[in-house]
Length: 491
Image (cartoon, rainbow, N blue to C red; front, side, top):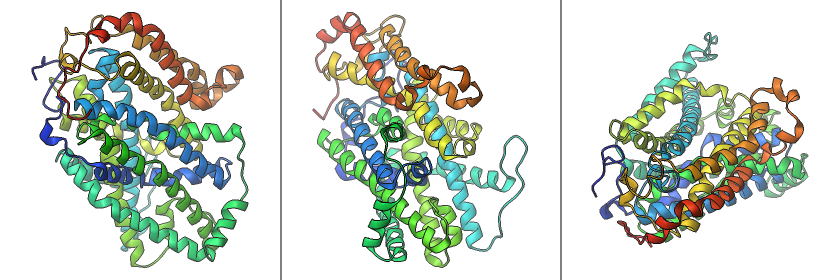
């Protein structure tokens, strides 16, 4: 395929048939590798800290992930059919130039996630060091940074280790996820068995879960569901970065369905049961595996910390480096490759000081997760409406790389998409400001902040509806003229 230098490079072109060999098992293992991570493990405990009952916390996790699976599979369809990454797919709706807005929005959120996971990995290295006798590994916080020099050093070391794998390409990522996922599942099973034993058996654990305190009211449950949707909102956009290598639509859909909702709910169950067990053993509920590792003894703890380190590398690369690497490459195709895009992501992930994002459960879940979902919800619905309802799944793949083609719109920007994005974000903006800057909350009327707990849903529905209303006049001619002018292997 020929492209203009401003829109394409070898990393952004459609995947050739020889590379479309991912089967459903690969997608299942990919998701298991991403799901079984410490930030996901912390969700159930964080929801309980915010007042939810154990059953409500598990229900919110399960429902949120069932909901996000739908756009995940539908957007993934375009990647599997045309072999294109998310940043190129976004050109169909946002325009060849406007797609850079969507790509940057998704990329900058992934940078935050990359930093969070790297912070977790650095703490894992410190826990390993304490376990093998290197001392307490603590220190006074540095000015401005807010963490000790030892913590910063461990963070940067883990940061560097991850870049080695990502520079080996997507096949290395797939192999890494396939090899590590079964090990992480085995570790979780061992932790669950330990917790059940400490609680006195399954019936005792069941009784603790059912009769524990906490709320299940709609006022707390549905904002929690929004946060759980937000947890994978980034992946629901850039899932074509992976499905572009799928052997068939069935492989990507079945693999994702098996690897996402149920494993996320089961991870929450393990976290809750382990928390009850630690309450029995240590007198305090411990939902952080690294804190628990400091309390436990024996060689299994050392093995577990090693697995957590591997887990964090595998999750972070798949979830938070691959997507933004393609996104930054699509923003500057002439100058930025997939590998240099990954480096940009890694650098920004340090600069945002991610330890401040996860300092509290309320900040992590109800500011970070809900806040960015207000932005990504409209982006996802615009792409879905455009692909499924306006174009009915038909794209001219070559025109996606043509600055003067049908996706150029007006100067490379589709006004309908930008208007829909602004309309989708607007209802949640007052609530986001109040959450980020609590001192301003009293000055913002409650009626303007009421929709913020449902930010992803509001943005998704409003953005998609506005785009559907505006798009016929914009797209009718080009959509009607399109056939399947594309290199596709999956129908």
